[in-house]
Amino acid sequence: MCALKRDGYIVLGGGADGDGFESKIKGLGVSFRPLPIDKKGINPWADVKLFWTLYRWYCEERPDVVHHFTIKPVIYGSIAACLAGVPRIVNTVTGLGYVFMEEDLTWLRRLVEWQYRIALACAHFTFFQNADDLAYFVARRLVPRRKAGLLPGSGVDRTFFTPTSTTSRSPEAPVTFLMVARLLREKGLLEFVEAARLVKRDFPTARFQLLGRRDERNPTVVSASELDRWQGEGVLTWLGDASDVRPIMAQADVVVLPSYREGTPRSLLEAAAMGKPIITTQTVGCREVVEDGVNGLLVPVKDSKALAEAMIRLIQDPSLRERMGKAGRVKVEREFDEQMVIEKVLDVYWLETLHASA
Image (cartoon, rainbow, N blue to C red; front, side, top):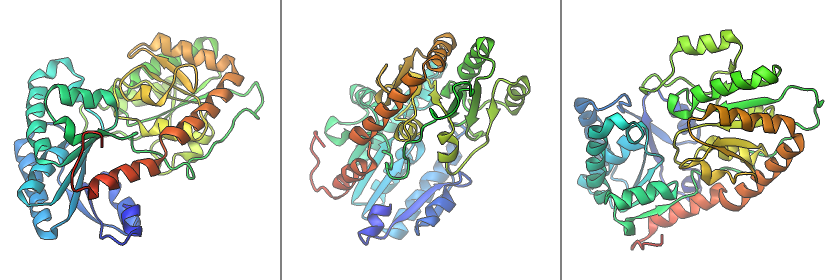
C-alpha cells in the first residue's frame, strides 16, 4: 500500500470489522471499509453478505486491481471482482488454516476446495507463501500452475526490525523463551506449555512468555480459564497483545513457534531480522524460515519433549544462540527482504500476460 501511494496511485483497504486493522490502514493515509467477515465457520448467510458487500464495493469504486488475503476474501472476493468486471484480480493464500489440518473435517475441506477451484479460476494470479501449499493446490487442480507463483512470505522490513543481543547480560541471568502468536491450539500452544513444564524441572529460572491475542472467532482458541491456570501455575507469562513487538522481542533470548502448519510465519521473520535464534517445527511454512542447526532448531510437530530438549540445548550454549541469531539476520537479508515481495507483487499487478515462471 505504501509503495503504491508513493507512486501516486489511489489505494483503498478493507478488512474484518473489529480486527484492529482499521487504525493501522488509516494511519497509512488509506481509506478503510469494514467487511462482514465471519471467521467462525461456514455460515451461508454471512458468506452471502460478505460476497454482496464486496461486489457492491467493487462496482462503486471500479478498481483497476484488487488483491485479496485469507480464505474468505480470496474465495468470495475473487468471484465478486470477476462479476464486477475488475480488470486485474490477485490473491495471496497465506496458509491453509484449520480446515486443512483437522482430520474430521473432510466434508468441509472438500467444500472449501470446490470454492477455491471456482474462485481461483476467476482470478488472474494467486500467490502462495510456501512451495508445499502451491504444490497442493496445483495437484488438487484448485489453481492452474500458469496462474500461480511463490512469495517469500510477507517479507520483513530490515530497517525496522534490527538485531539486538542479550549476550552482554550476566551468564546467570535467566534465559527467556518468547512465543509470538494468536492464542490458538494449532499454533502449538499446548506443546509450548508442556515443554515449559519439562524445562523448569531442571532450569527453574527459565522464563516463558506468550505474546498475542485471543481470537474468539477461531474455533481453536484456548480458553481464558486455561490461560489463567497456566499463569497461576507459574509456567508462563501472558503479555497480551502489542502493536509493536520489537521492545518485547529485544529482551528475549530465543523465539519459539511450535505451529502445526503455516504460510510463512511473520513472527519468525521478524525474530530472525532481530538476530534471535528460533525453535520451530519441521512443518510447512516454518521450515522455510529456519535451517536446522544454522539459524535455529527444528523439532517434530506436536512433540513437547523434543521441544523441551531443544530449549535446554540453547539454555546450555549461549555462544550457539549468538551464532544462530547472526545467521538468521543474514538469511532474512538474502531471502526475505520485504522489498523483494513488493517488487514481485507489483510486477503481477501490471503484467498484461502472466507466465508460469512469474
